[in-house]
Image 1: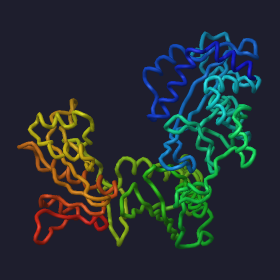
Image 2: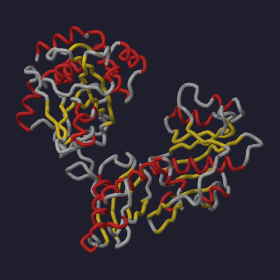
Image 3: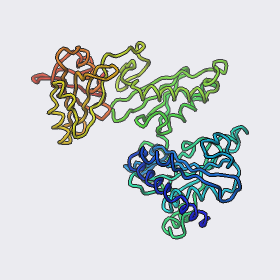
Image 4: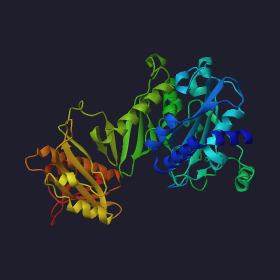
Length: 478
């Protein structure tokens, strides 16, 4: 194989150099360079097979954040880089022309050589080849996503390749993947080879796992209420699938951390934390009780019902359900259900102010005072800065802004809330609402506001005897 790798590295030296630069940049920034992506589109790593007549090979890549795939060291920000090696008949001028007419059976040494040539020796030392399920419908065996050789390497933000953690969830890397084969490191990589010989092809995670996870990398989850054996078979199977699904890190969102699943005969309640918000939230599902209650896809099996519910929560929570949904506080928990009515078009749009050397100049042009947010930004204490603009095709003009600063890890001060004269009062209320919830998600436990107003009262702020302004205990907000 060494001869094949050297031949490919020489033959495709220019596009491979672009590939490696792109992948290093991807690891550092979390996204590929547009310019380098265009170069690879026009000069791909693609050419005749070294082992099989009338076969051509193309190498492509994909990627995903790896943080939630297993337990990596804190602050590593690893990226999972996927290398796809695809073979197609040489009657086609290129891979795009071949479409789905691909060749699936050729010597296994070939795709590994192409992958190693692109990755280079150091990254190849840490790479794995994916192993897929075999017990699938025969139609899947000719499906591109199932049969194409796939190689994976995990890379830290500084470009250093790392071993997969020992609780890696391979099934979340690609379709039908159940395991992986570690590629043999170069003979000169003695330390890595010694590690593999001593403890295996994975990085131990016992000392670095998130304190709220189990050894398999999933969230630690307390189950309370009615024992599952008291439920109907259909309901119990649905609740088990729900339990297993919400334990998967990142399945719903990175901000989501389940802490308890409470089971009753006719419903189940998921209690969870969101981002750094000090509140506990809860959502409810009603599992089917019998098979007769199962509808067609995606509600055709108990597992499908649970999976569909989790996907719905994923979409809703990631698009602001905690803010726009119906909220009911009971003690330390805020119960979330569907919004009280269908959303209507908003006249104004609120977004974060981009932070750079010219932050807020467009707000100043509208007569808004940006001195304090800039001062806080330069001092490193700016917590949140948001802006409001007319919701039209051009997103202009800007009509208001709000900003808050930190005075400690959990105390924020909302001291800027300003709108352009003549702007509807609802804009200030919209800004106050958005910034309060953003501060809560950032971990604020106490928020002070420099003004008194009814829309602050609606958010749970109270007056401060003997002091101006208002204060919010986030753990008591409605």
